[in-house]
Image (cartoon, rainbow, N blue to C red; front, side, top):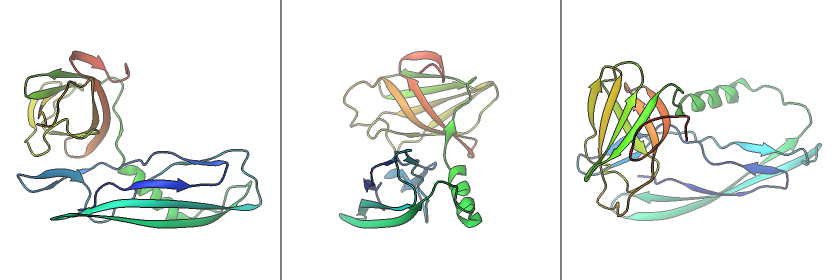
Length: 212
């Protein structure tokens, strides 16, 4: 298993890199040990912003140090250094259809913001959180992938109660969760196909997604 990479960028003045945009994950592992991640090849999108101060007619070298943990029975750290030199021009480059399709395919795998008319709530019980959603139609299948580690028990089944206008999803708390949390953030997958980013305050019965 390859754990999430960390990237340290070396960029010239005038260029800045944003956070990695992660595609929708999968549940991986055995019935007793479950984690969230990806299978086979995965493309990670990183937005890079160019300021107007970046001089034209010059080349810019982009470098990055990538660190990973490769785990099976033990975890072995690894790192590599990569670099790319690109020309800096005032006009847009010639369109590369192969690259365009690759980026389009990667962006289709990204979770998107939940619709504004969806209403979410999270109740905090003794052993579990209950994520409720009013989406205007019945939902029979839903999965939640937390953004923060050690909030829910990854290996525990997520129980879905289907409702006429949505669902309730019970998430067992992690044994390593030692204090109350204010918000539940992560990726919600409904009907095994549509993935949405959610950020819901804990302890409030109903609140619209945009009221963050």
